[in-house]
Image (spheres, rainbow, N blue to C red):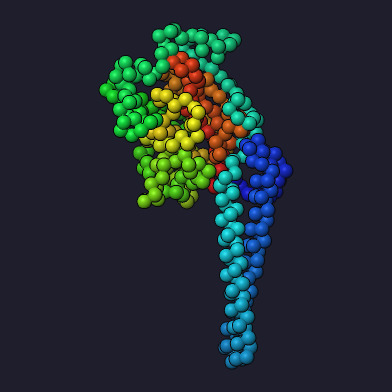
Length: 380
């Protein structure tokens, strides 16, 4: 969540920044009012607690002095004060819960360098790359480069080569679940191993990444720590009996590995990579193209994540992007890097660069990697 002190100290600038993320004036004012009431309730509770302590101290003195009348009077006052303290504590807890719930739904402050916009249409393509020469109009050149045989949709290619079996996957699990067969399955595993090997053996300016095999079911607090809850609960799979959530990305367990621990600055950055299956309901996919592998409930992904100091963060963010781009180039895929505008950023992100590969089979730029910087939002 965001730092509430920043809002208190500079509410006008804070609202100006958060309004580019879709935060309304009513939401912002409600947060300020809840915070004011919470602070007032905290003062009231502390005063009530101090009064109880003082009356208890005086009651003990009166008892030791043998002043029964005074002790009885102070005992009666202490009981009333204790009742007041309990009521003040209850009021404080209710306000704290309400304030915290709202804070968990307020997005991160955007990085000042992120383009301002309201949605996907305002994202900015900042670079293009292709395994062939590009001129002054790289997007048009990439989109027009491919031959007719390369423009066959992947679901047709997968069926012809018998490497993708979507009908039987639907029979087993329902729509939007994939089933790879034969060389298709081997290709998936090869890509995972190739990516992990690259991150764990290719030395960068900050070293290599430690490979983690995290659990794929996590506690509520773990999912909440990334900002996914409570806002995106409908998009996650929940195992009610065990109070566990299926992870939408390995980012979730990796982020919480060091939760509630203190790490010395000399240990930073910590570089982690992990393969995991990922699960998403895709609750907002109504009306979107879900054919083939375009949008899935279950998919495989290799994650890279870094825990850094504030001073290291921007440079490490650039290093993660460089690594992600390097893998796409090794595969020889034409792609572009897109700087997401403030209105299209994920709730936890201050800055995000998406890598989008051009797919001639569906005539779309498809996101294959998203490289985000969360500042102190998830840490808090």
